[in-house]
Length: 287
Image 1: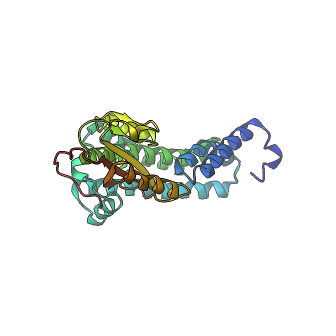
Image 2 (image 1 turned 90 degrees about the vertical axis):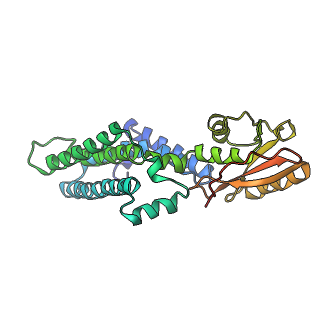
């Protein structure tokens, strides 16, 4: 960017820079949210695509060899952990999965879709062919420096979306959380004042319950309620005060749950005093 400082107002540079600035501003405003920061990845990719063809030959070769090493190792790691989820070997890889995603059941959650596995194998073979083509003798083309970085990113994304999808779904989605929450609740609707829309949708779709997410939901007819309590960030004191106030309004806390990989928020389940208890069900303890 410093070398292009006199051309920053041109559209092919100005538009990506504006997009990157918006993403950084959103990330800061959302207390360092990684999801907001991901909005800047397309802008960074565009800037990198314009920069690679202008690099000197030595730097281009260094980027190529780094891409070969980095993306090959990354793809190998994905395959190793996939093998651990399928067979339990290597044991250390499986132990790492269970430590980072407590409660995940690898063998019962493995994606047995043959098409997904075939796509992963074909992508890995295509990567090897691409590396062979790039390191061999061929006619000079302006986009040759883009081939390995772009191909490596595509390879790793495809492997994650095929081989690791069950693990990512368990760690990042609200489905397991919603299924655990409804185990602590009696039948009927759920009050969820101030709850994120993603949690409300998960409770309705995966929990099969009607959810009242209005600000006055706690005063309604629902016999169960959920509150999202922040564990970090500027809203900790406010959310904890709101949770403490429920005891004087006829609510009793009965359980606390959270997503396996989320350390920022905890969902507290309340039951109205005198409400019937939830039916007994086998509950997998949260770690």
